Image (cartoon, one colour):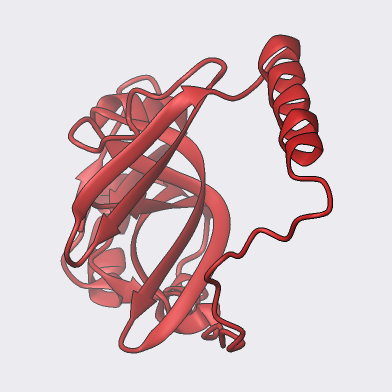
Length: 178
């Protein structure tokens, strides 16, 4: 998977995502492929980031150290000091009490990178019949497999189509900037 990501000029990141599509909210934690234009592409090591896209604000990212004993100790001490400073006081937070209804993840839409055992010369035609127009990805060192990137589709549509393709080894969602 890493070799294919590198071949495409992308990286694999474990993301916790949440988005609103067609009036429904979807949330998941999964590996995603990010291209070099994505703000989260270069986040690595002990650093974490939160990337947000707002309809008025646009894109914004919060980035900083988020792992290791010193950052964790600093955060714990900060929380203890904050609690001590606000003893016997309630701090109001403007959260809605309305329960958020999550949509069925099967309806969420993504592009997918799919790695398949076989030969692109003989198997790609069948894959295009099932998945439609796909982008072929090959890594020269891997002769008995290839990959492709699908068009945008729901998780449920991907599962139906994937069931018709023998030899699927892996799939990773492709995160595109909004």
